[in-house]
Image 1: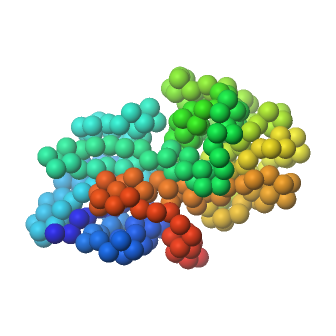
Image 2: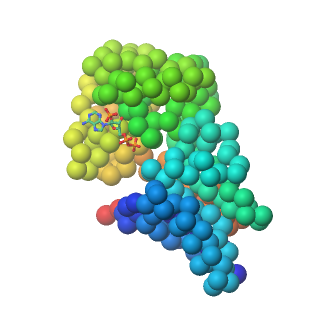
Length: 283
Ligand code: ATR
């Protein structure tokens, strides 16, 4: 009996997840599959039910799926067991169907962010630290949760649309967030231990992120969730100034571990070969 999982979203054709999970399925020699399916938000639950019955009719088992925006939020009312992190972040990126058919909702994006940084740095350096987060969209929510779990005692949050940052800060009340006007973000750099870009600026086809790093604290680490290109202008600028930099690909790779383990029973490894394989698919 093949264990089946996949990615639901719209669009999904450019996603790296099938390639990523496919690499692990082959590496660990599993009888498993992971495929992408296009699903509209208003058809989400009926499509999940159809997919499940289709897979079961062929004698296989539907174990769950990843969800992309906006389905990450659409699914929440239908979840039987919502994990604490998913509840606080307000988004489910990993759905696990338990043996009795219950839907378990997890958010592993924050784990992806934390573990990607952890590949490069000892995260203890950030306890009681200060972060500056650019952007207040869907990705920022999981990252704010990760920063809190890592022990940051102050998080400056800035967004082009300030009301959106304020709304996020109000929603995530137990995270020490201070909203800063977009035009004043450079003034926070001298206090910043970790600078995170969660906006789409700097992504292939998008405008560049313009930020003068002159005043950035010497020991600060800089990370970007954008991974196409792998080295954004922000990371390049930071690297040339001597800062440690962490690209966005690690977050994508590490967020996938917990789902893979829950569906297929093997905790997979994020290593150079996986990174290389996924990067090849991005070319
Ligand atoms: P995601 O869910 O991937 O985070 P999103 O919700 O569309 O995507 O958020 C994109 C982020 O990039 C937002 O913070 C957005 O700022 P606004 O809330 O003001 O839209 C930011 N962003 C996108 N284009 C931008 C631009 N040209 N200048 C500044 N910020 C931009």
